[in-house]
Structure formats: C-alpha cells, structure tokens
Length: 191
Image 1 (cartoon, helix red, strand yellow):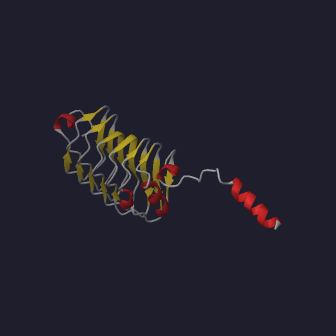
Image 2: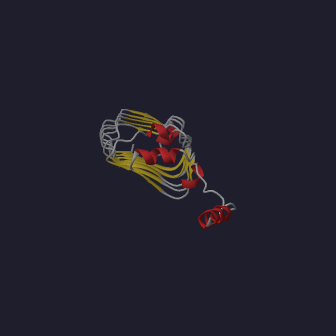
Image 3: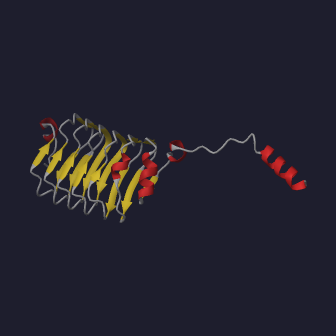
C-alpha cells in the first residue's frame, strides 16, 4: 500500500510540468557542425538557422535532404569534405553571412539553384568542380571570390544585380564560360 501511495504522489507531482519541446525549434539556435548524415537530417528540419552551419568531414553525405532549409542567418560553410561527389543545396534562398564552398576534393559541381542573397560568397580550392550554378542569385552584400578551382569550366550567376564589395575571379585556368552581367564583370581587375 505504501509503494502505491508513493507512486501516486510522484505522478501527481509531475502533472503541472510542461513536456520538453520537440521538433525543429528545439535544435535550430546557435552554430552547427555537420559531419554525419544524421546531422544533415536534423538541420534540414529547422527551415531556418539563426547561427552558422559548417558541413565537413570524410563521410559520404546526401545534401539533397537539406531542401527544407531556406535560410542561414550566419555563415554557411561547405568543406573541407572528402566523399561529397556534388554540392547541391536546393532549398537555401538566403545566407546572412558568408557562403563558403571550399576544399571539396571530389565534388564535380556546385549547385545552389534557389540562392537569392548572400552576405559574401567564396568558392575556392574545389579541385574537381567543373561548374558552379547560382541562377537565382540577385544580391551579394560584400565580396564574390571564385579562385583556385583548377577544373572549373562554367560559372553561372547571370541574374546577379548587386555586389557590395569586390569581385575576384582568378586561378581557374579552365574557366571558359562566365554568366555574370557585363556591368559587374567590368568592375573586376582579376577577370
């Protein structure tokens, strides 16, 4: 009888407590380091991250599940990676800080089809990347840097209307096609 009464009191005492919150809002604040597929799935559920997101490591990652992620308030850094065959981030429309795609040794292409705005963009040292596609990109608040990508042949940022800082596109010996409005290209001494 005493055990039953103690259990009843314990259960009754917990009645007013709120259950812990689950779902996207619980883990979306702050900065995030993504190095496993489980991390990719967790951050995708956020829809928006107010901090920075860094994706790096040697494990194979499927970034296609990031489609629900539309905005990163801080920096979005992809790299260095050693098993990522393409960098495809379908859902991200806005990066408040810098978007860096750096040192992805096996990635053959970099595709950001919905990206409209970024604080800055750096695409560098991606040895196998033949193409960079950002067809919806309209605004970069600071610098655009595309450098030291030896396999790069095509850069698409044809909708770009505003760059607040410098443009540096250099060290890409195979770059044959650049889709950037002529008015912006003329600003770059490093073309």
